[in-house]
Image 1 (tube, helix red, strand yellow):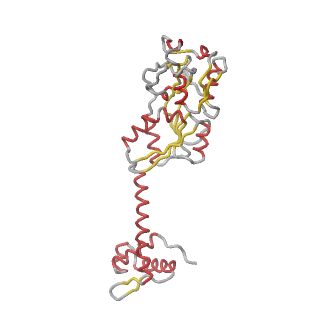
Image 2 (image 1 turned 30 degrees about the vertical axis):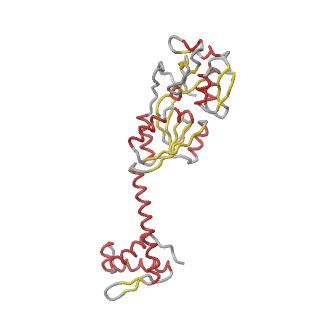
Image 3 (image 1 turned 30 degrees about the horizontal axis):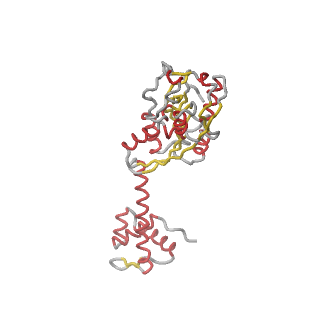
Length: 310
């Protein structure tokens, strides 16, 4: 049974055609002439007939050889483009990386991080896959749906992981809310126990963060409205519908509402993670995220670090 032609056999065929000699082609390819002749015979067997006619001082293409020649050249050229693309990706020149994130990360630390990455590697495009819940993010990453994930530290993750920093949460209120004028910029969640909250839909992982934080403060939040989106929660709270708890770095810079720090602080650690040892591009992006992810929020008061794992 004939085997499929190989790229190397096509390369040998083109070398013989270009040099018009088995002897000169063998020298160019650093092969013995018998070895080259054997590979051409294997190629001819695979294609169903002779490709070259040996003459005393040269070689001549057969009709089958003339039919095969342009396709052989195109095949080798395409293979060269594939190899060049792989080299460019490895060298961070021109490639695409798929990054999976939770929605709040795409609003928070990701925009300035991607801006800095783009300046450093303008030829690398980024495809985002966004998820509402950290569990869905972890499942997608485990299933191979992205090259790298960025979100809260996943429980029991066995693959490589890079901690990026600690994400602060903020309370958003309307500017004219009496509690918005706290002198030190902080507010106990218990002070909002009787309020109707801007809450998140059950499928959004932040709904669990809010419920857990309020439970620790001794109450269960009552929702006046539930939203799928972090950005919408900020705007609805600033409009006076009720308080919202959001990652501070996801709050729009020009929001009309007031931004307060919960007392005690509410935080979670964010990380980048992969399934296995990353390739050069993915590893470079993860290392870049470690050094360039920004967690300081202008105008948002810091407090002693006592990270809340939620």
